[in-house]
Image (cartoon, rainbow over all chains, first blue to last red; front, side, top):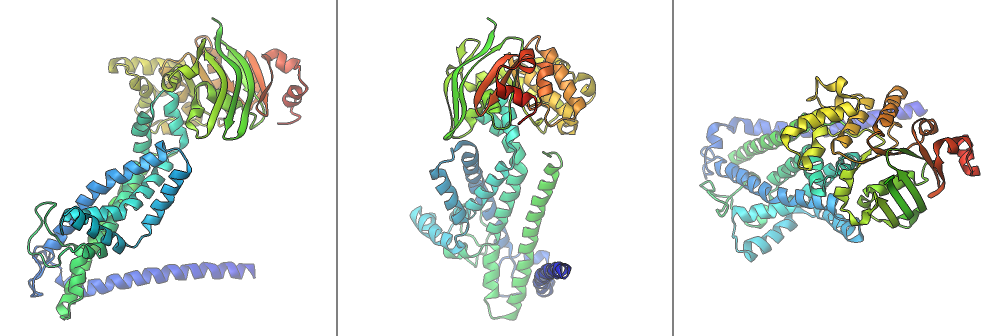
Length: 280
Length: 248
């Protein structure tokens, strides 16, 4: 009887895996089936239009790239810095524990809430308007908790023995962190950062909240320009009644998916490349 | 001066746990002093007090006095103190870098000129009896060495900084017997120039290499004396019980 239960459990787990994968494949197939025919260089290189045949995602693609770079510039130094402080410098007191619990809680706050915050703080408060910078700051807030948590995990995974070895030679704290802890934690930190950024890339809700436009016939030239992004463009097309726009939305999804997959692949490559050198 | 280390009334706490109780101990220059005792007796805590490694642990505190060559370590900057007192750990912990970089790291952070590094690396590896095995592959990753080689590399790394005292925290417990005996021979060679304190689980090892032995139990130093005396004619009943294997 025990063996039957064991076998049954194995097949149940297998079924769960297969169902999850099938759903994902179905989704991809649906997008591919509808959108692949609309994918072309012209699609990538045209601005949105009322006429489906002429419409493209140039402004959304560039908006997303700008947004991601700005978000990275803002969130990575802040997030990694906070993680280093919490792991290496802060003493374990009730205060740091409260801070850490709250960071974990912030990671679970719905993205729309960050949108409201961004609208009040950056768009209105700092008078940044519906600019790329306001969007990037909002996105940075959104992914900051994830960056901090994943960087903390990477730093924590560096064995204590390496820190001890460094201190025992008469290194200062800064030298230990700079020469040993950070290089060893870097692959993990990078992986976490890239995955967080890919989350930011796929978010539409906070951008809609801060009023990113959906119809923009130019590419942004600087951080203070208005912008649109891939998820918003897709959302916009998908909400139109005309059937062709559904195909455009599917094509946009394919572009977005390709970008996200490329980022995740980069994260995996970085991790594998460095893991070969570092074995504890 | 023949006293390298002198502790007076040393007490230590991890939070509220009283880990060391009134330790008075003298370590002489160019001698190997072994500290033995069952797990949790405070022997590692003790040697980690000497180079203030315990300062890195939250909630750790000490009372009493530790003099290193007559100078109170509370008045010494821990970074400078650790340059003078090297440490070798239980598990070999080379940096995941080349063999050369492992040795050169310490001198470099203390501002040694680049041109001198080559000779320091060579002399340190020679002192640690590792030079002949690695001289043709100094740029290989240190993680590729065997456990025993890694531990000798860690010893060479400690020597490269130019310490006066070296603390060994159970240096052979993760090694095979042949590698362990190499480390023991090495320690005996090193005591000509350095003062050595070794914590060990292995009583035969303490008897073989050390000049003086201290027996710790439950945070107290039960007995301290000449190694021969401790192993042949222990004064205390509990020392005798421990070295004859009745507990621990």
